[in-house]
Length: 449
Ligand code: ATP
Ligand code: MG
Image (cartoon, rainbow, N blue to C red; front, top):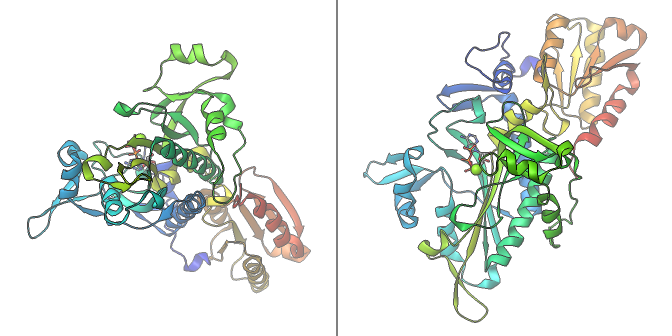
């Protein structure tokens, strides 16, 4: 992509309304624009990152055996009356009427609708297990939308729903998602820590929130520091094996939000040198809720003995539009964002230090073609702007590698590579620059675990 033809409205000043660093940087880097309280347009750079995050989520969901579909944002109130949640949900639900005065709502979640799809088509235990997911906009009229897309009113969610014959089956589904989540966050360059969460009246140990540690996180969390460097499980392509050992291994280490524990329990449970009290951002939540919706809505199958069985369900959420700022909270410095390669809007930026100079332009064009041919997702800063402004923009928008070329380097046949994360610089012959970048970038793509 040539920057001269791109749409990148970066801001010089830090916007006053932004309280936390990710919100400031997303505005400054021209990633989002606020349209109303808790509602944002995703500008091209932000949208590119969001799509990379969505793609990783899709790949890991599909690998775990979940099947993607797409449900509408507007839902009929009658469906929610069946489960009893239409009246129970409260003010977070945006309620709408159409021209026939029929009650609709903008979905804050989709348990009712997916249960309706299930009961319409699925008849036999032979069709189980089943896990269906979609990635769709949600609306929750949050009391305090804040921190940009971290807590917005309109936000994107990946929500998956599992259907099983019994609790044992639901447990297997839960373990599959648990492992998929570990892999998903790892692939985004994050450590997603599973924290024991409230199960409400259902009880048991099948509710986990995944948190990313950051000073600005809204939750107080307590954890065993060994969780921070546990190896991420590699699994066979369709997650068919028994994943309970992985689940047990991870959840044997203490990690809980302050809603679930207190400091006294935490002391007592984790040895002193491994105790970590921190702040966390909730990026995902997996939850088993038994027959809470299937029972009132009549979602059942014929079991092996010919009798009807009410199915057991779980739901599994991830917030892609929250993950974008979560990555930034975890990875930035005073100059701007530092994207992990796997979610970076571009993997490399080619900086032409003297646009308009025929020799430099020609050499940069050749490099740009070579970068594209090598399959590196590259932004080419071909604008007629001072070098300082180009460096500042490249640092601000957080592209992992900068390839820098000007008339002086060209004379010596040399280009420079700057590593955004470490600030390290290397000078190397023009002819080997692209191969060197490829060697740096490819291993960091995390397209496999
Ligand atoms: P929170 O406790 O942060 O309000 P929640 O418990 O209401 O979140 P869930 O219903 O579990 O959230 O939704 C699943 C995921 O959707 C969350 O883990 C989060 O990543 C995302 N999410 C929820 N609410 C928002 C929001 N207002 N803005 C952005 N993402 C959200
Ligand atoms: Mg939650």
